Amino acid sequence: MRLILASASPARLQTLLAAGLDPEVVVSEVDEDAISAPTATELVAALAAAKAQAVAATVTGAALVVGCDSMLEFEGAVLGKPGDEETARQYWRNMSGKTGLLHTGHCVISLPAGETAVEVATTLVRFAALSEAEIDAYVATGEPLQVAGGFKIDGFGGAFVTGIEGDSHNVVGLSVPLLRNLVARLGVDYHTLWRHDSL
Image 1 (cartoon, rainbow, N blue to C red):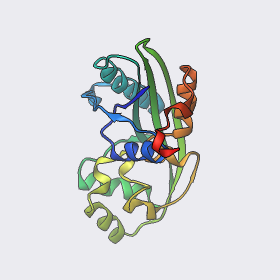
Image 2: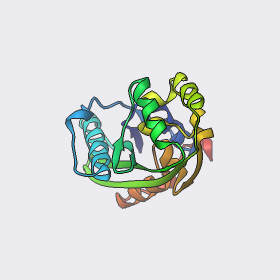
Image 3: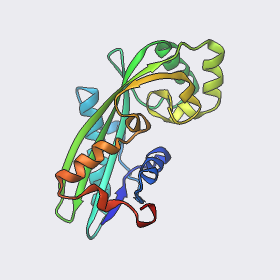
Image 4: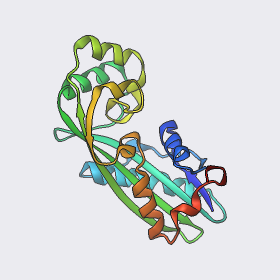
């Protein structure tokens, strides 16, 4: 069965490849700013579903379409992608030495039936106490600008994450254990998705 990742995230693709899967990538053109929800978990679930649905509408034949969206919930606020250097600096000045909750919404659609499974994975993330020089240096790498919460655990930012509670894959942007559960709900044995060269 085809596995289609409805995401432009290189980190999500790498996570699936490392897990023995071989997804096709089809990027959705969803206007994320047009979607709202009362809580962070509801928002990431809605965004993941919107992305998966947009791509599923373009697919013919049997396939599993996976949509994801991540955000950091910090002190009651939802932190998406900073987008610019000053916002990224402000994120880190606030997060330094504290903890946040990284939420990733997952939506899997089984085609052609259109059956859907949606769930959110949450991982607690502990951040190191950073100096202004460290914040400036990290922001200068450009890495935090286009990632949820302004950090990547699998990049330069990994040095600034002192611990997590929960699934580490989720912090990268896609929970592999949750994906296994979701495809099982749709009647697919996860191990049948492994690519042959990984066995």
